[in-house]
Length: 195
Image (cartoon, rainbow, N blue to C red; front, side):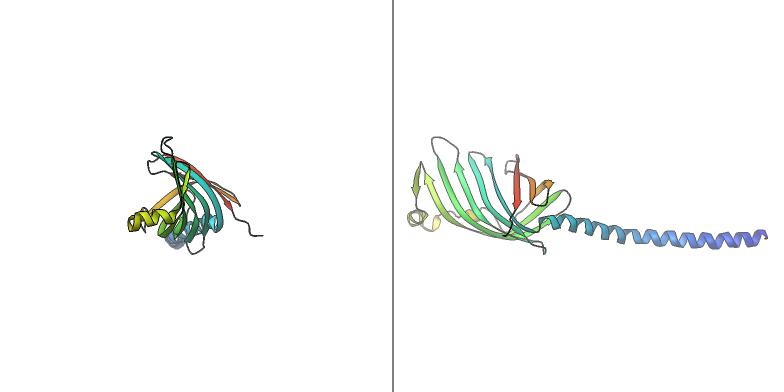
């Protein structure tokens, strides 16, 4: 073999290798996007279904409590219903205001966070207890009139939040959320099993 034919042979192989490497590198973004989508779908699939939860946290002199159910759908929407309670923690002024709540919005999950955006929320007064005495929400509405505060007015449509995913199991998820003052609190959810 002559030096010229050897160079031609190596140069054809080099060009072929170079084209293969460039083609492979061009495909990396598409492959990594596909893998990222698969990974996101993997985490999202753990959430799809109905989950019951009960949690509370202290914010100033008021304890916020929630007991209810959240259903996550594959189309990245969720529905929420349950009971929210605002409980006064000052011993000289004890109170407990309970509201039935229904809400809906969007959600997403990855390996680290569950993110959610409130689409809308409706609340109805369920019960009021002040100083150990139960007061009918209907009586309060008649007394206060149209100025009666509605809990859903506090949460505007489009409000967003996120929770750090601490544990994920088949029938249990543990999330870390933050109260309005920034302090963390834990939320443990359990998959609702349909008999």
